[in-house]
Length: 407
View (cartoon, rainbow, N blue to C red):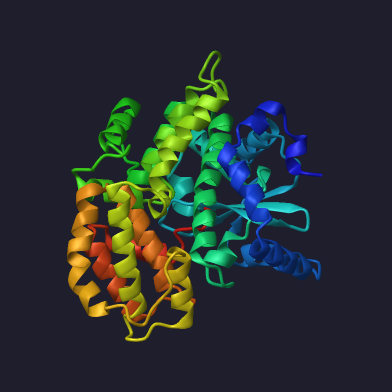
């Protein structure tokens, strides 16, 4: 029986529609289906040592050691209708983070970094706890994102892009579960502010209205961002992004959170408008801005593939996944493309916002990792292109490593 069958209609409604739609499509994907069958066969052989690893690398927080945190967990479990034994763990890290680990032997595990536990109050921890439980409730672990995007199996850019798109909508669903548990948008905003800034001292007095104005000032909706450095900083802080704040603002104004609020359909349409900023629509769109993006992708992907002066079969396959209407040709004039790279990047910069350019860099990272890893030459060329596109190096590294994984 599905976990969701135990939830109320209201709790089911919290799930983002596109999360559910893409989740269903991905489960039917041959690569995902085969991988899940392999994982299932492996787990049926016995415990995989998840709990053993947690016990050896972190500290279990039982009721006597962390009574308030366990009380928060109990409250979220009751509100979300979760019915599985839960174990909480803390691990030493200066970064604010939490994670819900896939259940093993009938137990669910949630990990918290030490810095997050030290810096977040009980109300904020309730949002984080609900978010992590949301990943379990909506069965997000059924999509093995890490196996595919971590290079453990071969997958073309089309599947990779669908996975990253789904993972963003999955975060929206988990955020709603956290907001539902918390019940206070000011607390939600404060939590995301801490995740974004790292500031927890009393020298800064958080004001939700000012925070939202700063988000709105970025002009994410199809507009150029004037202050590139600031917008890049916002996008680089995991798991925060301005899109998540705006998405939660829409949720708190909807019928899911208040009486006579916007309808669920209106909410989801609003989410679609926000998330379109991070979708690879430029591959099909017919606008001049999208054409500039494709022209840049064409040249930059070939130059990254040829960074070590040899284009492999895997890199050719990635290129043809991007440009299905073209066949790769050894007659491509790479020297000419190198000379045109600057002008192609400038055309992108003149017609696309930083979020759009970040999507282009994320796609180029797929080419850099075509052979399962990005070598020094590929990394260097990708960094060069990112610099021309005014995208920070930190985003490049994050795209090459764990940007796609669910928190």
